[in-house]
Image (cartoon, rainbow, N blue to C red; front, side, top):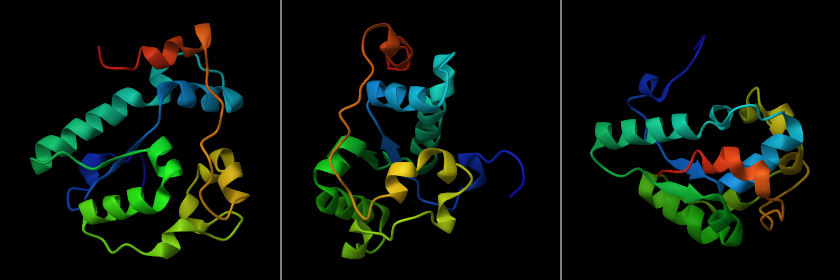
Length: 142
């Protein structure tokens, strides 16, 4: 595909959503970029995609919470695979170090810790607090 890609361009796919606490997203984003507007975090687009998939399929799409995955990757990923009707493989819990072709264009910018790892680890301690969290809080449902 060339140009912008939307979830609407993939109607035959099953979609799952990975979410992360806004304060963790803000902290991570700020390490690499200046956060000028909450919209830069993508929460509104993620919500639109979720609602689109909910309306299209008439089923609540599977949602993976990053802290849950890191706390018990085998259990959570097995359940996610089951929800998507794809086979669970224990090999999903580990990978070779370094970049991978599947990383896409953002891999070089965001995946430095993943590229240095061979499997899941503990959730990072980093969170944004005080004034720094305001953009993330504005993304939460009211």
